[in-house]
Amino acid sequence: MFTGIVTDIGEIVSLTPTAEGQLHRLRIACRYDRSTIADGASIACNGVCLTVVASGVAGDKS
Image (cartoon, rainbow, N blue to C red):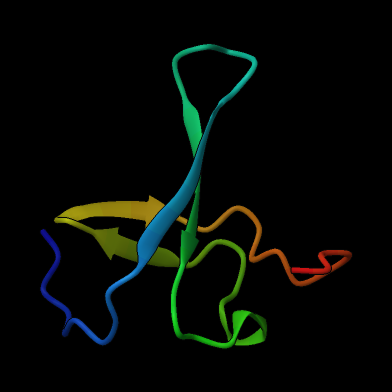
């Protein structure tokens, strides 16, 4: 159960099915500096805890 304090509200900007077909990769925009979000961090999204697999900092131009 998520018991933390909500500090930002993100927006889903893309949803991409993975090769397995059962999982999806979400790209979520937020106000946080991406360099402060560690890979492996757990972030709650509408009551569901999601794991950051890539913050998009390395090699990402956006």
